[in-house]
Length: 64
Image 1: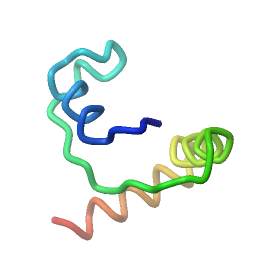
Image 2 (image 1 turned 90 degrees about the horizontal axis):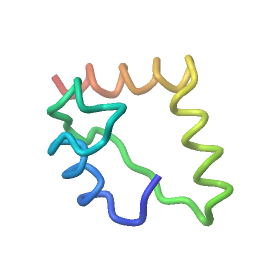
Image 3 (image 1 turned 60 degrees about the horizontal axis):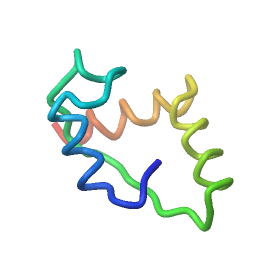
Image 4 (image 1 turned 180 degrees about the vertical axis):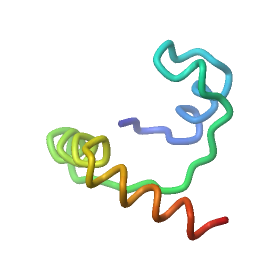
């Protein structure tokens, strides 16, 4: 969840995020604009859930 997607991806790819550092590099495959912080947190929780991760894998596989 961020206001600047490009900067966020750059931080991840630079290894500046502790939780994702072992998994660099990253490629953005999906982004979504939300109306507010609460809606954004709900979407983030969904995409990190089992069903959300499954859908992201489908999106990733379609790009290959």
